[in-house]
Amino acid sequence: MNNFLTCASRNSDNTCRKLMVPCSGNECPFCQTEAEAAASKEKSDARLRSLGEIGQRYISEKYYEGSHPWMNGGVKG
Image (cartoon, rainbow, N blue to C red; front, top):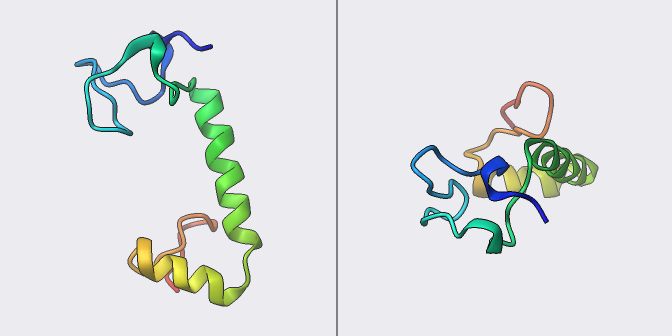
């Protein structure tokens, strides 16, 4: 369990950037350190890079306005 004071998503006003609610402290199941958040993002990006062209295009258009932020430089599709 992480200490909520070191959570990567905790704002200085004690709100959560991920959930857009007041921080629930050590009870929060989404609490992550900076290192854990970076590892999670890299794992997610690797999964998106592993998809075929059609899958990547679908996701980029639906969620990222045509850009591919999981690729180096976030190229437009």
